[in-house]
Image (cartoon, rainbow, N blue to C red; front, side, top):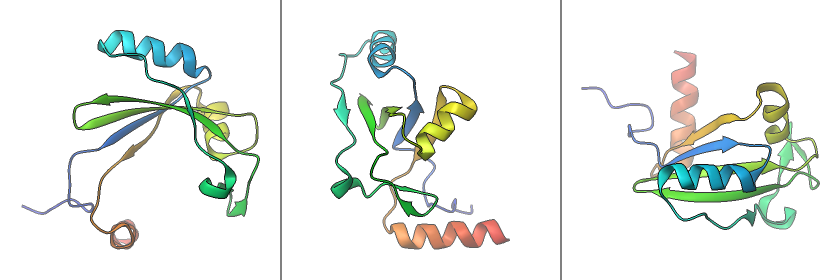
Length: 120
């Protein structure tokens, strides 16, 4: 059997973009029977190095909340009003699934393998 490009079938994180993180985290926590998680900042630009279309974007920021679900973490993301890929997603698509994350042994190899797969 051929292994998937990332050598795993199991996501480690499901991320959802939302308008109101306080309401969203409460709704998900209640639905899942979990404690309501704290809301945290994604961090200062000095740490996040946020970019927008390849350019530095120190104004972009987001609030985050994480709900642990066994082997998968539900990540909730509320972007601020600054232009960002998060804000673009929210404006274009509304609230919803933003990304799945997978744990890989070597991120650079995984990225190369994904690029090669996309070309074939």
